Image 1 (spheres, rainbow, N blue to C red):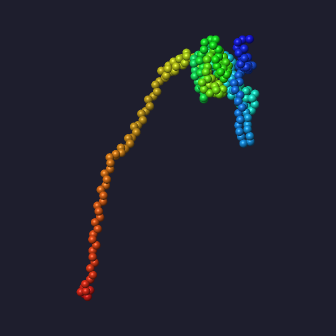
Image 2: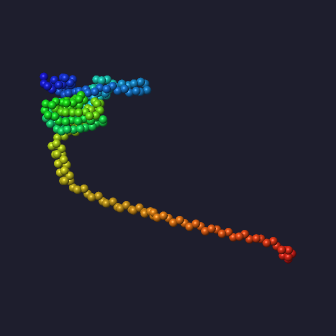
Image 3: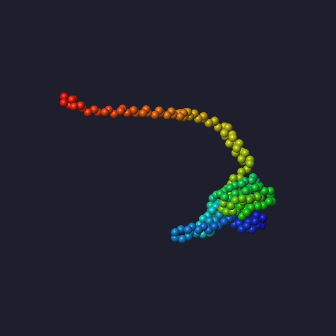
Length: 226
């Protein structure tokens, strides 16, 4: 029995019939309260890998645990990725955040082994990584930790590949014709200037002079007889 088979037996990993590894990381019962009562179903986080650089994760949901595990394994096989590896470890250090989970992965010397917790260990072992240093710095929620580890492995790249991609991009930009200059926009009309000087107060209207009232004279007696 090889060391790899002994490690699989000790951890309780299961083969999927095709030389791969299938690991159930977490099973949770979820309760939904409705008007008629409570509905129960289960969530199962499953990790599937071939032990040679490919790994996938899946979250299955069903009313029964076996069905949830089966669905999770099917989803994991549909979303398998190729992990960039340098021998038995990873090419460089990576720190990845997913939600409240934060996972740090560091390359290790040959013979170090997998220094990881349960959730991170399931992913890196299924991918075939045998020497690695890891640390979970955020929430202990196994679902978020597994997703953070999966995305951290997906983000790994070889330095040579990164340099080649940048050189190819620089050559493509140098060979492409320069962009046509954009037509200048017409100048915007200037806003009318506001007169900020204080306005002169209007002079008060002149006072109205009233004429004195005229006295009416009574007619004399001679004038009345004429």
